[in-house]
Image (tube, rainbow, N blue to C red; front, side, top):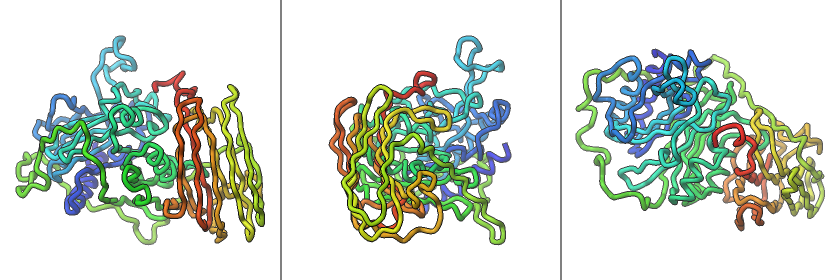
Length: 482
């Protein structure tokens, strides 16, 4: 409990800083309250907190406190004091009946990795229980809510949907709500684990946002020695070139990202203002005396203390079809790969590197991939920096080569309409679309979808990727909830 309340203090400081910047909605990372995934079911029991049903419109800040609601109450007071919408990830405890409710333990409890949304008054207005657990069962139960439960509408006219970390790899809830309800704004709390060359957090978040045509607000846990870092605001619905993100593996401590995002008012918005924005009478004057002390400062890196090394994993590239793109070459190359069911992806690159000194590989893959013992159906086209021309040298982290590519065009011919583009440099920075152009002609499943990245002069390219997801073919969904 002490750890969780200390984290509430840190979050409250960020909330008050955000208030000074007139923030409308503030998102905190996955595991932000518990710090790390609970170590087993007994640990989860210690952290679990009751969360009211959003349908009841409860303000926990105004209710009596007990040790099973203390954190929920404190977070409600934090949102109320800040006068803004707040999204916080926590371990939710729910009552159940053994033998009737799936996953119910002997003590009559279910535990969920849960995002809770508080409005400006501190009212619980939405919650989402993580549906797709990443090595978290049996610590947590699989989420049991509907796609619609992930949605909420604000007093500034925007309807959001939300998901938690691993949920982003699947078609629900967010993509389902985008396609069914026209939602254009998405929230994500995450404790992402980075992998190269296709899975560092801003690379995946940007690509997902760009493909979905939605604004994505991401709060990532910053524990890079565990492989987790990266937060960002990606306004793909309005201006995909103008993203804001942080991915810093040299500094410890949290950071507040603030950006103005242009969007359209939701058709689901009824126009009723719930609370005036930035009220002249601070809401904290109406707080009960039980409100928690919030004097703790932000965590910062202390001089003289070594910064732990960023633990970044490597992708298994042995299953990809590859063609070498050697230095000092002009080539037009096509490469195809076939899944076991004959589903095809074909990749083409127009490559002109007359003064190059290092190798790149064109890569293609269609079929099921193993990602930390979870299995997904993907179709991929990519150009990856591999200095020696061997896959073992691909995407090595080190000093950039300072090589400038005059231009190239990567095109993929997919059988899935869901294709995520990204371009990343050798020092692991996203390249803005000011320096490359993305075009796509979308079909349906089993029809042709064409996607292409056309680059201007590019310095220190690590990977240009077109990543296709075929949700309906995922073996994961044969064994776990989808």
